[in-house]
Image 1: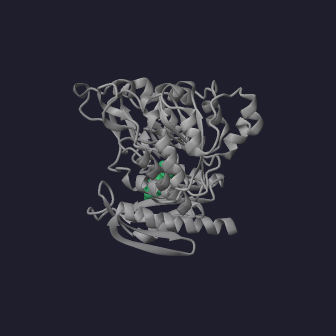
Image 2 (image 1 turned 135 degrees about the vertical axis):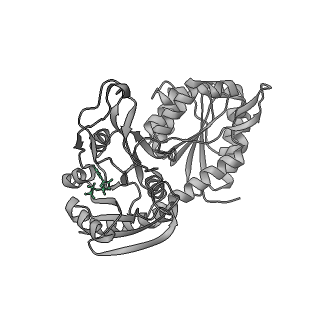
Image 3 (image 1 turned 30 degrees about the vertical axis):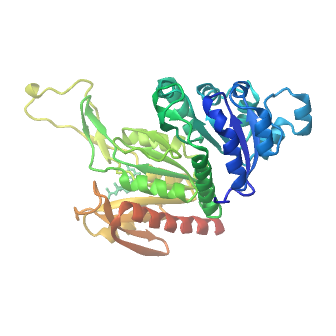
Length: 410
Ligand code: CTP
């Protein structure tokens, strides 16, 4: 058994579900992994497991009541909330999930979740039909958006005779998930990007010609997404402003979807407060039709068509101008005089660094899983030969981390 949870104070919330019968084993496994565990039960949890067993295995009195004067006198609930390094709710019933998603504080467990800054992991357990109900899925999505981690559920035979997703993740696997999470946190807690806010724009934008047609480009958003994920792994709080068609990001990444360059500009500035590093990977359409037609343009009514294009705002330029992000990194796709164009673009836009790729080579870049780029910053240039975008992302984030660390010194 790994002992990477040593020194961890884990508050285990148990709600009313048949899987609660497994929680004494779960407590045992957590304690074996080195954790100190205090248990909080909801009223319905008592119908499936006894407080006596849980007290015996955890070595702490079990809490279940916000208004218990004796318990409050020994350790008040706010003190208990502060004691926790992390909160695990297993099993998490549909109703406890709904309470948490609503910020409800009607019982001890939900109050502790609101009062504690500790990360919260949730192991849902319920009938498969309930689990798949849109209301439950909506609440889980809300919790994910709030930064909670959802573990499981497993799929298979259920106590009620059904088959499907809704079985609580097994105690051993829950301990493994918490351990891995802890290892990842330990690995990043000393890196400069840990807890810093990184904003990434990625993907194309679409500029309407009429209600059904638009101007856009071939950007897939994959390079930006890979950079966002690498920054997340480096411990940053990442927000992605994504154009149309960009695939799903990791659940821990905040995501804002936009369609047009103007919307991207507005969302970037709406979320810019406290941004430490801004990375503009998006292939923003530089121009948009001056007047998008309100109705579909009809072919049989005109032989030729002309429209005027007007410039979109320069998003990254406007971010650099605010001086709010400590490091601003741009991307440049060039077809000729690649390096010189990029050097000029970096200074023209006031960027700390620019990453350039030569898009005249169709085997890399747009819509391809490989890329080859050069990072240009004030002190030098670093070349990355052709490799997967994920590998490029990892190396670029390492370089950007160094630039960020240097910006803190100056
Ligand atoms: N960019 C932006 N807003 C725009 C256009 C581009 O934020 N309206 C960002 C891109 O995300 C990228 C960088 O600027 O990080 C370079 O984009 P590019 O289109 O090459 O720059 P342009 O200003 O369009 O320069 P050029 O004169 O070469 O067209």
